[in-house]
Length: 558
Image 1 (spheres, rainbow, N blue to C red):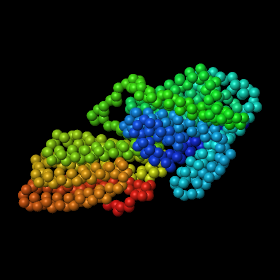
Image 2 (tube, rainbow, N blue to C red):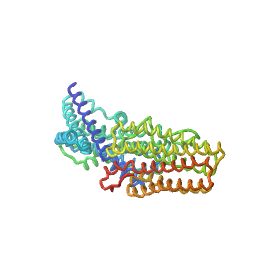
Image 3 (cartoon, rainbow, N blue to C red):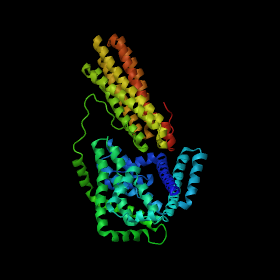
Image 4 (spheres, rainbow, N blue to C red):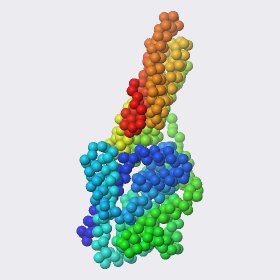
């Protein structure tokens, strides 16, 4: 009996390891592309459902899809209605693993293990290496199934085991068992796949398996619920949509099974294919899982608006408005890193937010100087402290995600993100420098000349255009306008020289005070350096983007 138990645990371990290796390998090779699909192709609930189904079928994890949806909602990047579609699609997509298990590919599994090992160890290309993880994971998954099947086959010769399993017929206990096991392993695919293997060995009955599957549906919600606990209220509602859909679906199917179990079994066996082969019952269990999910989506899809409204009843109110002076991270969470496929995306969103704050602070500081308004200086300095704090948090976050397995394309971007973070922080520093100039003007009771102010306004307009276009390139990854940005940066260099010359002429003509001379020169030089930092933001990801997007045009960096 001990030998059988060891074989079962070993096979289960190989199965879980293979499934996660395959899932994580896919995330590392194609996670960035899948994330982009998930983000951009969810304009309505139906497309969200199809994308969620496709994403989950590829990644082999509904937990990953729903957690990403909750994360996007928490960050304000996805509407609750669109996340609802992804959650529905993920519920169907999660059935793919059990369907694969039911078709018994164990005979060719060693070939996949060997091919994956060769790709991982003997081919230097990183994409091929990570693809090897997918191939090996696929093979290990079925080697684990084969090991479990062999061990379970011997259980048929133990009367006590057969008696116990045949006596386990209580529907409520079946639902409870499915819920507990799935909550522990954090994957309904694992639980249902084990049932498929047991069914293929004739150890369990289809009817009790159907009730266990219902429990798995609820247990699969645990990952999203745990992720949403520290999140905003809309993210909690997204996780609650997942839970309510599965709870209502379980209740509906539970009642239908109690009333029409023989008829439902007949339908399932007809679709799965009846026969005397060992895999017939296993296929029926896998198809039961698939058909239950499809049926639940069809039934509840028209009522999702009502379910969304119910989440507003259960999670009341809105998030508290941030108090003045309180610093917060809007997109990233240092206490819990998100799924690797969205980790760097969250960093990008937080840096975009910090960049806008830095740009606004720079403009605010210049406007205070031009209006001779010292009352706004306190806000400028406070914003600068906020930007410095954000920069430190983002740097820490980037360091942490860089220590974890992330998609290859995202790994290529990490170094560029560190530079972007630094350049944005330096733009914020220049706002503080301008505030210092105004403070010095107030102490010395001096002002810029009218002509000097007009020159600064004109240069600020060019710098603002440069900052906006550079941030757009960083945010969208569209490198087609890099040359235009470089022309703008050249323009700031030319303006610095011409404005310095014009200032000397005014100074010689007595139109500008000597006390303001050095400060004007520092101000113009500071704006030119802001232009340098802005174009650095645009070009910081150029090498990584050119590497991952072969069609990117080559442009000489400034």
